[in-house]
Image (tube, rainbow, N blue to C red; front, side):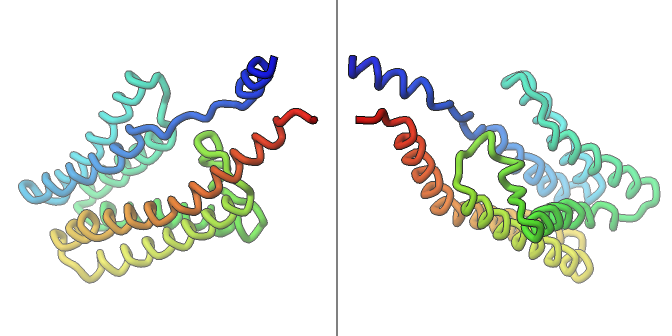
Length: 208
């Protein structure tokens, strides 16, 4: 009877989706395509290659996981429109401001959400993580400030650097910085998951 009771408790704990490998790979592949193609063919071709890589990953995600990566589709569409504008107007600035637009939008959403007492990271990632409210609040503030920093850094970089140096800055400095910052958030995330797991186990524990 005790075994049955434990099985019932386990069954009552909702399973969380695992972190998808494709989500991580989708961040790397377009940057790699952007960097490599820029070395051989220039900034316009690099932007097109990055869009092509992103579109391919959206298709692969659909085939492998049977889901539409809505944000990836949105981001790829915006990038495609800005790249088309850059080509038609022969103005590379439209390509260079793309990271500022995306990181600036994220910073605004996360920081304004915090000012209004709402943790927007929870809205985006609650399906992947079960975390206490205080952890969601902390992550929202941290990522909001990081995206604000990324926006300012890109705005300074594209104005001060040559095309090739700006591409190197995006791939060799900002991409690793983002990865390192993400890794730095793992301890608080893992502690939050353990705390939630303990809370759920306590809540499902039968009375004596």
